[in-house]
Amino acid sequence: MNTAGTDMTVLLERLSAQTQQVHNMQIALWVLIGLIGLSVIVITLFIIPLLMQLKRTLKEAEIMSENINTEIMPKVGSMVSEIEPLVVKLTSMSDGIISSFQSVSTVIKLIRNIVGNRNIKQEA
Image 1 (cartoon, rainbow, N blue to C red):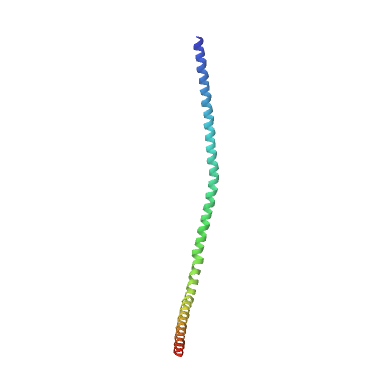
Image 2 (tube, rainbow, N blue to C red; image 1 turned 45 degrees about the vertical axis):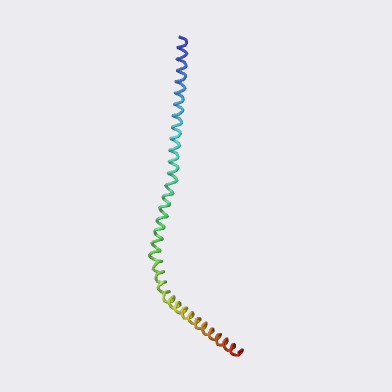
């Protein structure tokens, strides 16, 4: 009977140890659940203001793009239409200058050929 009592005591001690282990695991589980909940709260508290700021920034960008489309782009279009005749005029003037330089270059070549031919005739 002594061995049966000892066996029973050992079984009770093991059962008590396992019960304590299960209790410790439950505590660890609740701590982890609490940490996850706290993490969700912190992330939410961070993301909500971030999303609100993003929404405000997008609204401001939309307002700015509307201002650009309604106020600035028509002015740019009118400026381009005002500058266009000047650009055409400058282009034609630069074409005339290039043509004048080509004419001068041709005259200089002719003069050089004439002077070169006279020098050859005088030497002969």
